[in-house]
Amino acid sequence: MTVFIAVLNFLLSTIRLLYCAKNKRLMSVIWFLIAYFSFFFIPVSFESSITHYRGFSGDSIIITKADIFKSILYVFIFNSLFFLTEWSVWKLIRIKINRDKWVFNRKNRYLRKLQFIYGLILIVSSIVYGITTQDHSYKDFIEYTGSNWGQVFLMASAPLLSISALRKQYLLAFLGVIPFVFFAVKLHVRSFALLSFIPIVIIYTLQAINDRGSNGLKKVKKLLFSMIMILSLIGLSSWIIASKRGDENFNILNVFPDSGMPYGTVMVMKLSDIHHVRTGFDSIYLYGLNLITPFRKVFQLPPPEIIDPPFVMSSLLDGIPKWWKNNLHYPTLWYSDAYLSFGMLGLFFSVFWGMVLVFWERLLMKNIFIFSLLIPYFSWHAYMLVRGAISGAVVPFSYSVYLVFLVAMLSSFSKFRKNLFE
Image 1 (cartoon, rainbow, N blue to C red):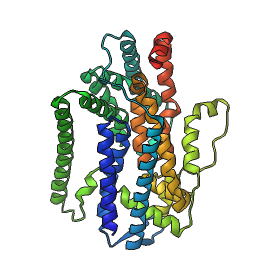
Image 2: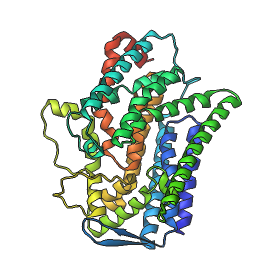
Image 3: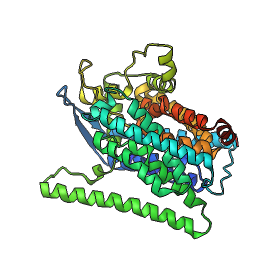
Image 4: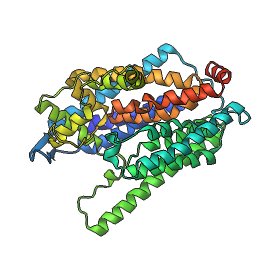
């Protein structure tokens, strides 16, 4: 029964993904992520039991078949409620996407000016951020060590890539990706790709879908084939390296990004019950607070004394004591965040996020200019949200998005207003 529900969950998310993609909905990005993680719940469903060792406390916990069944059923119900919510809200607001082509006019001087300014910001911020993070690691990144203005302005330069892609200047777009890739490798922060490479892929896919005839379909197939080949090569090379090292515990599924998150979800749900831990609305509160961080600091309002739920997860998973100085961050999908918040009642988060994400989708799909400015941040937001880093999902919105719109407005207020309301 557990395997059946896991497979049904994957089929539901995949079918919904294909439907949203066919109808050119941005919600297909969310359903792609849901389908991706749903696939990795299938291996979990085959487990008879899972033994998890908690390094700091030195104890271990056994997740039984009944615990696994409960978790996968919870995930399936969550996804079903999310589907019903986003489908019904979208039907209710009746948004018509009238985009013959997802392409900007290359002769538009205002857009050219914006590219130049965002490009200048990218160059300067890359230099500044490179200098300030010379000795930094992932730990420094998540603990916000030192000045973060280099990172803020780097994130604020992301529209250069989306505007370039929408003008079909893909060489310029991919040149702009280079600094983001550099910092992703240097700081071990893959999420920089969410601001750079992924938005370009989204725009290319939208343009391909809009192509008439079989040409567009061929482009989409080539893109999917390329992605599958890249992942296959990574998996094969990892397997060869593991074989040469004699690593008997190597699992090829672990090659895929965050493929172990479903296991983490099951563990967090079990451990939160054992230790009677509930975080309530903390993640939602921090999500909203990050949106107004600049204003909070202007009015010198003190930050709330709330522990970010992923840090609570790290304590549950590894038994890390509160006095431990290192901030370890373990988001394990939005299902575990919902369960950690209110247990079974946390299923209402599926309805909440369904409404929130349709709002973001409506905002971006209604106007191609707004889409060009916000698609990098929507990409970040979507992945972080589904991954369970709820407060981190709006990190770029704290400062960078405000700077993006300020630059667009100061470049030419009349042109900005015209593009904003066309």
